[in-house]
Length: 152
Image (tube, rainbow, N blue to C red):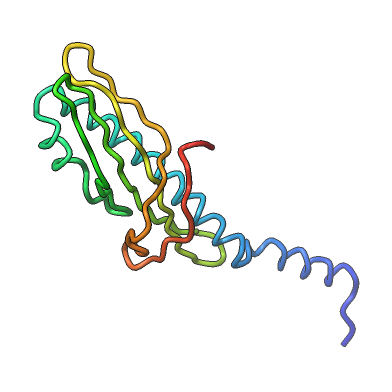
């Protein structure tokens, strides 16, 4: 039996269109994890801003969203002076998954420094921070693939 050129072309196009390969699936999972970590960082900032209006800095840090479905937030260190200025360094570890032809999971770490002041003119700023060594290498049984930043 002989297969004609049009049939081979259809088969080739069908194979190409079957979805991404493993490398693309891993890249997609890392992209989703990175987006999730950045969104979580923004939610932590929002939470700090809201909670600092009604409770003490130390209590606010204890009540940060310390666990999300796809990630975890860990306060690395913090300080506050009597005038109300504060600094908190936080590690956010987030996992994501691809949903193409190949299934992959990946996790990323984002370290953020939140700083600002409490009181009538309260504000919370957020910038990238260095991640310390010795941080957990897994979230939800997924190994952290890389450290990411707030920037796009």
